[in-house]
Image 1 (cartoon, rainbow, N blue to C red):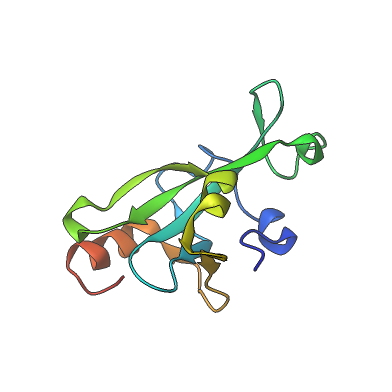
Image 2 (tube, rainbow, N blue to C red):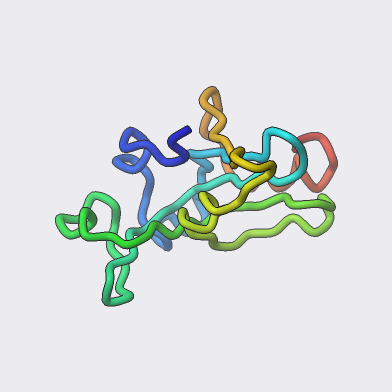
Length: 124
């Protein structure tokens, strides 16, 4: 499964551009257990270590994509905001030959709403 298709890459804001209006656009999860990432922003990382938006003319030169969002790994009390790269997400194998998946029916949701629901144990 393509975790980050062009249809999402072309619409997701650059890291740091939405400030307090963070909206999760992408949900990536472990289909066999714990581990969910809600992604609100992304930037293309270039070979020289600099970052550009995914719609920037140099974004096709990217060596990775870095995401910012909210993650729930084990305990909802420990869920947190943070960053992760697309390459890291793709490298996670939950079973041999089986990786993470993208929620194809996910509806964009404010990260604060997701955080509140996770912390009160009403969403995973």
